[in-house]
Amino acid sequence: MRTRLAIKIHAILERYFPERRVFLRSDNDTRFIRLRPSTQLFAFLGASAIIAWSIIATSILVMDNIGAGNFREQAKRDQRTYENRLNALSSERDKRAQEAIAAQERFSSALEQISLMQSELLASETRRRELETGIEVIQSTLRRTMSEREEARDEVEQLALSLETEGGTGVGPTADAGSDATVDFLTAALEDAAEERDTTIANAQDALLKAEEMALELDLLKDQNDQIFSQLEDAMAISVEPLDKMFRAAGLNTDSLLDTVRRGYSGQGGPLMPLSFSTRGEEPSVDAERANRILGRMDELNLYPIAAQKAPFALPVKSAFRYTSGYGMRWGRMHQGTDFAAPHGTPIYSTADGVVTHAGWLSGYGRLIKIQHAFGIETRYAHLSQIRVNVGQRVSRGERIGDMGNSGRSTGTHLHYEVRVGDKSVNPMIYIKAANNVF
Image (tube, rainbow, N blue to C red):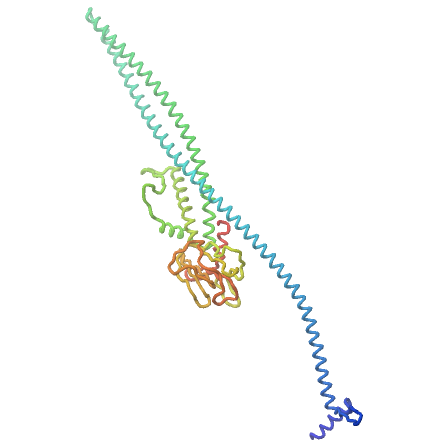
């Protein structure tokens, strides 16, 4: 069976590759090489394989060159797009920085205006009280003067009746002499009474004029106080509302937040005490209520900046950087922070006041710093190249705590920044974006 198959194969090969002989002749001898069909087949297949490989390799090289050219063009386009995006982000960041500076200047200007208005308000309130006291004194003097005038008038009438009675009953020279003396006395008394009456009337008229002038001045002062109150209320609204909006945008309860800060900064003492208008046991006036409301808002205005220093509203990187990864799902896993990429050794800063609770190596974080802030907030700074703080150290907002690096499970130099509230991660950009229009 095998012989027949071999014979058939040999016959087929003979048809396409007949046996050939290659003669090699020399001066003395002639030799030949016999090329069998199988040998020719193997040679043909080898040559075909080499030619096919050459064609395929050449095609691949040509296609690679064409593809490389397209890839380079695409890379250039991507690079231009990336550079344009970086320029746009840089311009946006500069714009936001300018807006923050302008907002800070407006905030400082509002505080100065509030301070001036507060001084004017206190001076106006003191002047109003002095005017009220002066009017009360003038009214008391006027009532006393009117009472004295009535008493003098009654005394004159009684003297006149006494004169008439004595003039009708007296007789003889003695009576006439007594009557003359009495008349002289009564005349002098009447003149004194008339002079005192005229003086009293003049004083009363002057007091009335003075009272009218002081009442007019008091009305003008009330109008001025109303304008000052309105300006103060507007200034408070302009100053407090952006801060309140910032904290609410970050998901913080402003009432409990301010109560926490107030408890932490509750010391009081003399000689200067917190400002408030006393009602002295009486029903508070409208102006007193407005003044106390404004003073309450001023107290909030003092507490908000303290609270802002204790919450992570600042950026951890002040140098040029780019965002390389945000908060959320990434590669099928939850990325619990935001990544900031910059050159190796870029300074890293604390985003709020707090206490360092960890400063060392931790698993995939590499060199890690944990800072515990107020209101149950914790921030984490990972993949650092150097740590510049110690556990238990108190740090302030904007204080340098480390350098950017590539330690731990990291693909390149960057900062992994986390914000946690009650050991639950939240998006750090919520705090950063909330403060964009304020700081």
